[in-house]
Length: 101
Image (cartoon, rainbow, N blue to C red; front, side):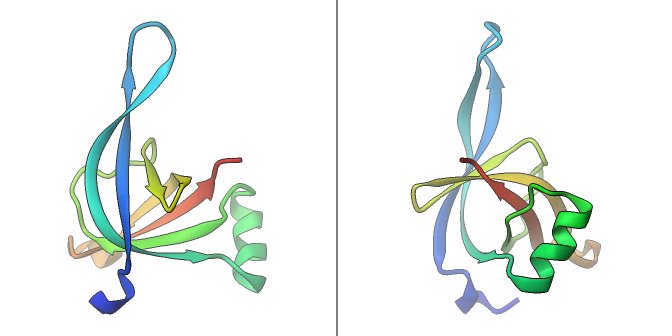
């Protein structure tokens, strides 16, 4: 992984069940990430698998990052759809994300 690509500082948040049925969010970690919106053929291929995928986040591996978490990145919320531990080496995570509207 080239660290120069990781130029965005993001906050990873996890959901907290407050008991009242309302979801609140707590900071899980902060990380340097690369955000790449899907374009062209990548976007069309992603729509066939999951119509909600809008981009990909690349970051160093952090244990415990799951599909129910989200990123706060430059004033936007990006919800994790599918986390992938690249080559199962615990060095890099590629996360397919959808942006909230």
